[in-house]
Image (cartoon, rainbow over all chains, first blue to last red; front, side, top):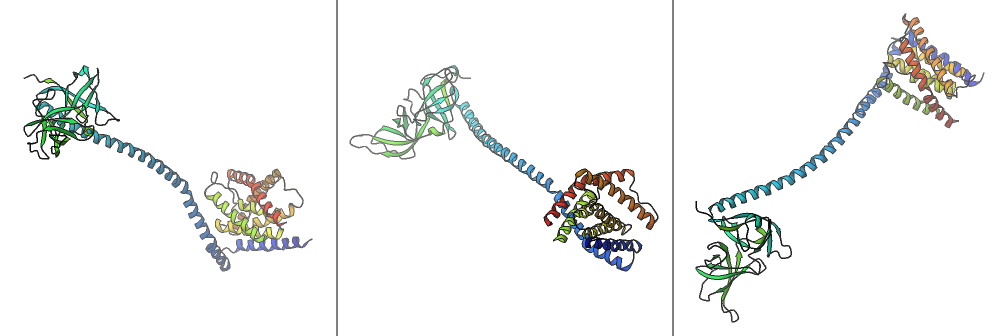
Length: 274
Length: 158
């Protein structure tokens, strides 16, 4: 019998006796001490294991919740962007609505008959030259018809029709070099001409005439195209007569800058009396 | 080093037993992993170390069990001693032999526990036929895992 076997026999006998003692003396003082010692060492470990297990068991749920929150967050962000876009479109629509209501209210008071048209395209190469309108011959627009717009709650000239198509038309703006209109300032007539830039030039003013900046320029009765009294613009600066230009001329700010033109009223004729 | 490995096995199996009892019980019954560990250690480690290990496993089960303090310690110690004697005479290396051996030893342990209870408490401790079958089945099914793990640790020592 080798050493290990002898030791095994001895251990078996010892631990069997110990186990029998445990069975025979379950409430003895030494045994209670052993159990108490075991309780102090084992039970906290089990408690910690249980706590850790409970903590870890919540991890998948928390991760899932986090992922759902992330997805929800993305969805809401996209929704927020869409709503922001919608809001800006709504604001633009409200602004256009208010402007159009004002225009309609004013046009009711006007004594001309005509048609409202939207500007659908600006001339990108010559911004101050022409725009395309969404109304044409089928809507009653004729060649050389004058077009008005609303500026500060009153009518102002926008230009005149130079090309007419069945459903669209081209409007020559007041700022185009080909545009001119006989205008009246302080009771005197002069010729307002476009220059291909933001300002108009008022030519052929008499040197004796005293015109101050800020004077309003309106269409003259002598204009063959535009009705009289329509706002053209405001005098910005007056240039005195020179040798080469023996007349006074002035820079004029148009009542409707081309960039602000959204819709125009194209005059078709006079309104029939009710 | 041997005791460190045995401590590691004990800690791992105690945790697995707790997990099986609290989270993975099948119809209220769980495999006797600590008993299985005692058998596996008896096959792989030296007989004295295996007997100490088996006693501690049984003591641990008794401590958690409450009733008949010492019954598991006695049965596990006996099982370890018996396995130490037997494994020299039979080959426990193959998987079916391990499973069969564990099934028989688990059945013997359950019956032994019943008898110990009959002697010391006056009643035969019987988990019911279903419990008896499920415990034997689960324990024998898991036996290759523990035998393999224990053998791997022991191989390093050799």
